[in-house]
Structures are given as structure tokens and as C-alpha cells.
Amino acid sequence: MWFIISSVALAGVLYLLWTRLFAAARTRSQGVAATFNRLAVLTIVLWVLYPIVFLLGTEGFGGVDQGFEIFLFLILDLLSKVFFGFLLLSNHQVISEASSGSGGAQAARVR
View 1 (cartoon, rainbow, N blue to C red):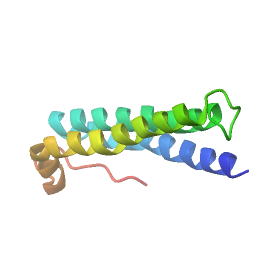
View 2: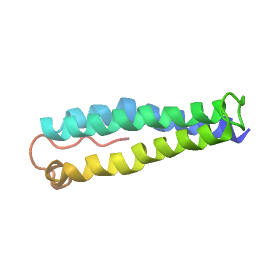
View 3: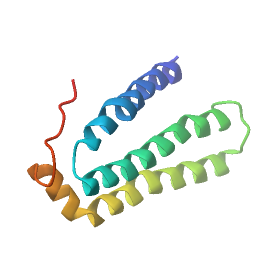
View 4: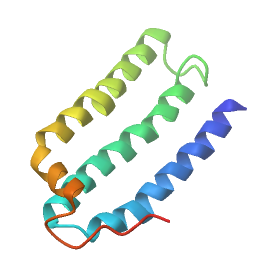
């Protein structure tokens, strides 16, 4: 039951990210849009893998043993948190540009 509820919530977040936020990023400078696209695609791919690993794991269909399931979640956590944070911080100049509103058209509001 909770898996279905959380999967529907994930689908809502990914829909918002894929439709409105990509469109809003296109109204910004090329650097901001490129950084956003890179981080958004990374987020979408990794977040979609979480429920897949859950379904393959011991509480899902039992396709992989518990040790390998833990390893897969470890890799997903490292990529979605540490690697994402590294990419975000390594693009500090672009993030500063995006937060100040300079370098292109103003951001479209997400409604």
C-alpha cells in the first residue's frame, strides 16, 4: 500500500520536474539551463531506480539477496546525494547566477 502511495507521489514530482521545471530552465541562460538539465536528468534516472531496486529486493519479488540489495541502495545513495552535491557545488558560478537572476531572461514561475 505504501509503495503505491509513494510511487504516485514520485510520479507527481517527476512530472513537475520533467514538464514545468525544464521549461522554466530554458528561459534562463545557457549555463543555468545546462546545469539544471544535467542535475535534473541525474535526479530522474536515480530516483526511478529506487523503486526498481525495492521491487527486486527482499521486500519486493526477492530477485536479489539482501546483501546485493543493500549494495545497490548504497550506490544509489552515493550517486543521488554525494555525486549530485559534488556536481551542484562544482557549478557554484552558475548557481550564483541563477539565484541572482542575472545572465538571461527571468525565470518563469512554476504554478
